[in-house]
Length: 139
Image (cartoon, one colour):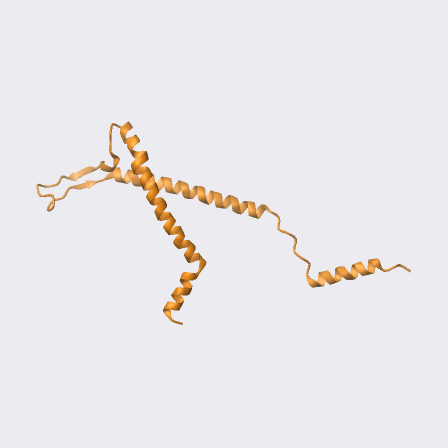
């Protein structure tokens, strides 16, 4: 079997396609959450804290030299980290809600009683024999 045929069969499996769709939707959702945090949530928080731009908050360990190309600034950018942390919390909460929804749907499916199984051919034959014997006139 050629490697291309094996690869095509691997890609054609439903789970791989579902995973790819999930990754693409997850990446788009991550961009939406990033925009939400950077452009909607953090500006009012920064305003409330005295016009602070969280994306620019940093601890400068070594300031840039006269020639910034040769001696760039060395800083810990904790404001960007705070933004990323808030994005993570939002994504984790949404994933939690999705998992909770899926689990509740699965519990509802499990709670529904299954239809009784159809009788096997031998059980059906025995039922017919029983019915025939009961219908036979007694002498």
